[in-house]
Amino acid sequence: MHSNRLGWILLAPTLVILFFFGVLPFVYVVFVSFHSWNPFAANPEMIFNGADNFRKIVFDAEFLNSVGVTVTFVFFAVVSELIVGYFLAQAFMKEFPGKAIFRTIHTLPLIMAPIIVGSVWKLMMTPSIGIIPHYLNEWFGLSVNIGTSSFAAFATIVVMDIWHWTPLVTLTLIAALVSLPQDPFEQAQIDGANKRQIFFHITVPMIAPAVVATVFIRLMDALRTVDEVWMLTGGGPGSATRFVGVHIFREVFPKTNYGYGSTISVIVLYLTIVACWLLYVTMLAPRNTKKD
Image (cartoon, rainbow, N blue to C red; front, side, top):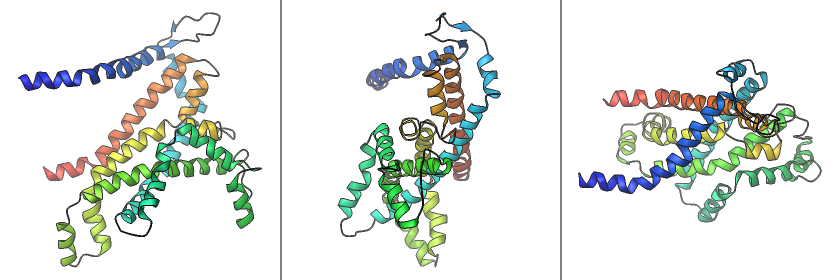
């Protein structure tokens, strides 16, 4: 009994901070989502409009387009980061000259703020002064302008996100691979299993929890990407890179439509929870059932 009380006492500061900076803001956003509110209008008071904001979302072409763009971005970015991160993790498991230096350089993007990442890539992709368009034109004869090409803008954001967050995936998978017991691998080799069979039947199932946790983190981060995209393309050209986060930003700040912006935020949170739940059911639930 005494140990339980001590545990709650130690958790109390964290719970208080979580309540004031997590629960209360969420409740307030949900409350605002049922109102029409422009604090800078002639009438700055909240006007209750029931579920009108939620009905409006269903017919909001810009929002629906932003969801499609975001889902496409999340798929290409997260899948690429998992693949590249796994191969880098396997490479770092081996010894090679300059490993410590390369590993340090590899993790440097993680310490950079997203808005700084967007600014740096903006400079590198500017046609007149950017190093990337210069060498693409000089080496391959390609003229790249993210201000006019929708494909170039979207592809650049995907590559930028891979560059920024692959080190996180690599570090997570290194921790998972290092913790694996060697007995199953040695037994599989004795039984004549090849590398592909060992990978799919031993390595993947054993690191599945780490992979799912990593995907959860990257999925939630990717769905709310704003800073880098705003600095790099501003959501353009057109609506090619207008992700959900950028759409919310445009609704809340330039348009000062706080009620509708809050509604979109609630819907995006719901979609994120559903996506994470589906991922868990697909990848981990069957595995846990087999164990039982």
